[in-house]
Amino acid sequence: MSQSLDITTIDTLTQELAAIQQTGSRRIALLGSRHVPIMHQQLIEMMSYALALAGNRIVTSGATGTNSAAIKGVMRADPNLLTVILPQTLERQPKESQEQLKQVIHLVENSENNHLSLGEASALCNREIITRCQQLICFAFHDSHTLLQSCAEAEEQRKLVTLFYFD
Image 1: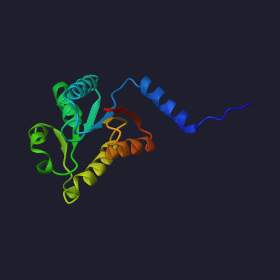
Image 2: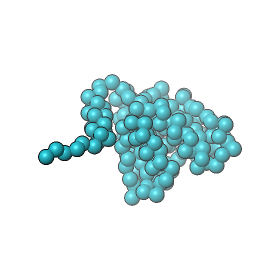
Image 3: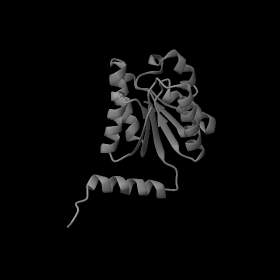
Image 4: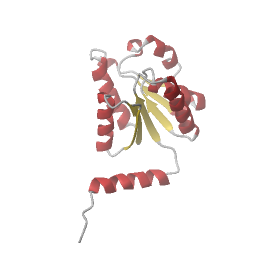
């Protein structure tokens, strides 16, 4: 009796084994919800700090919550390892984020998206972030449609995806 193997399962296993064996730095995208409990923000900050200390390049966006915590952690470790890609211009970001974002060395603004809704601009921004990474770490709720869609797109591009749920 032969058992058929699912090719996508083999691909995923191969990707995970390759990631484990990789000793050099990686380009890791950190994305997540704006609405994050403070304890979770502290964990995300510590994780991004540790990832940067290990020499990994971190790519994220500029919103409050997950992204802000990731920015804080990487900035503490090594600001040169951080790239922040905004869905729109800096001026369109929440006031509470702007001061932090002004400190980021590698900041990419997408002025061509200013005419779009924040949801549409965020989806395009997440797509750009994913194209720049080897691995995606995402923090979401089960109803975070934009983030879950971004995770699905990353998997389609054969990126290593780690998804944490807050609920």
